[in-house]
Length: 107
Image (cartoon, rainbow, N blue to C red; front, top):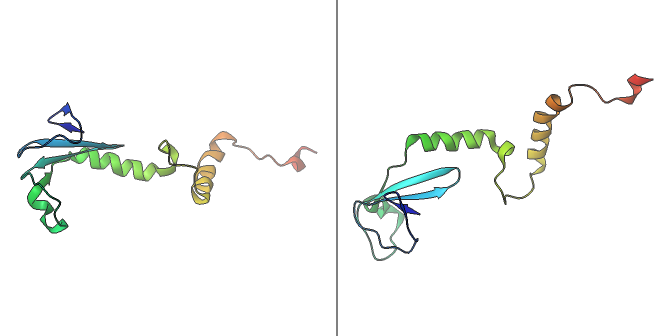
């Protein structure tokens, strides 16, 4: 977590007006603190507490990541699903091989 460009521990107390940046690859979200609070509050009160000031280019990066999806899998996400594997095979196979592997044609 960074506050105004300085890396800090997550437990640090924030003040009104500070900008908190949170990295959640591939995007870095930024929030401006409007009013610090002591306790948790309901979702309806969240807009009074902070303002989302994330750069629009970060959202474009997120959308690009969603489009590419299976091609650049994040580390630790596990094996691809059957659907992802088939899509990956369809994407990669024509480029890598470019020809038919049928042994019947060789005879």
